[in-house]
Length: 445
Image (cartoon, rainbow, N blue to C red; front, top):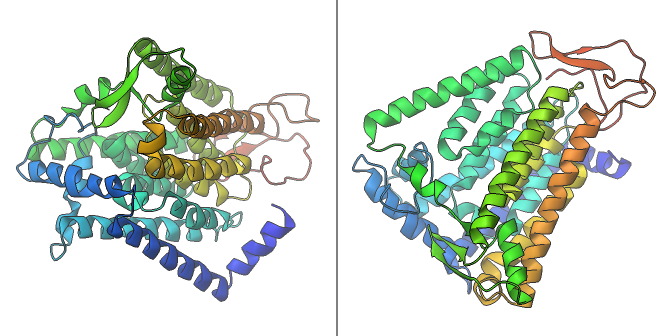
């Protein structure tokens, strides 16, 4: 950390700093809720997700069946619990209760990030990132259920260090809500930590699925709708097609399919196959990293979790604006540890988040769907930032845990990366320079 960031971190740890963060959270979140309620020009579609889509699903779910007949239902069965959760606040309308519960999830994430800063290698940079970057998305975070999913993923990563079974349970529950939180386990140290986390995740997911199967019909009906998705306009492949259309090299168009604007026309199926192929390549790279990694620090599980989600996000056929909540949350978790390698990646995510808001909802209809030069530039810029972040994240993760440490003459560095039964990496005997931010430390993960 730089001396400036260290000074800021120290200042925020005092009582005045904590009050300042609480005040900033209250002010920004109040503004976000107001923006959601007042429906400013160009933002009406943000609120409609709750008042129309989620509310309609709720009306089906209360009858004991999943809304598989709606092509927009593309989520694992535990998502039903999120859409039914407004019943916890029966004195409020569905919209009011959903927003209130989502704000509570935001508060829990903030508290978790602040508490993580109390660790011996902790930093408040993660809490500051979350506090200041989430409002860049305006009212969107409180109008999507992705904040609840992000809470599960953030909680999983924060728990893995000292409560690995609980971390696995949260990841397993998250996977049954929206699949991707399971990727947070990719960086767990070899040995008992990984076994406990994976087994706990599988057990939690299996138990939850069994319970849901008792109360709902057709719990796996979402698989068909998800598998048939095409190339969404906002995806990396979509930005390539938009650019092709702008320069006259592609003659397709966009239309509403599966609840989102997707491209139809020549080469779309090829772009979709390429996206799936890139996802496979990304997953193979993550497995290769997992096999070859030799050094774990307290930051490695956090860094690997962010890296995995970046890879899968940028290669996805769908890259909805709410996906930035996932990335901001995991980047914030990385920054709670002084030894993270992902600081430059976090800055790229902040920049991509700001551009995302300009894309949706501010210019979505007038520029993005119209395929204008400005809209094409914004989308290519945003996806370019995310692609850059993904590649950089992979390089930093590889360099920190696989590449030979200068002066050692081998790829093992100062630790062999194996678990000792308590989740700690065994320290080797080779000499190494004094550790600094992002460098290898005797791991206690």
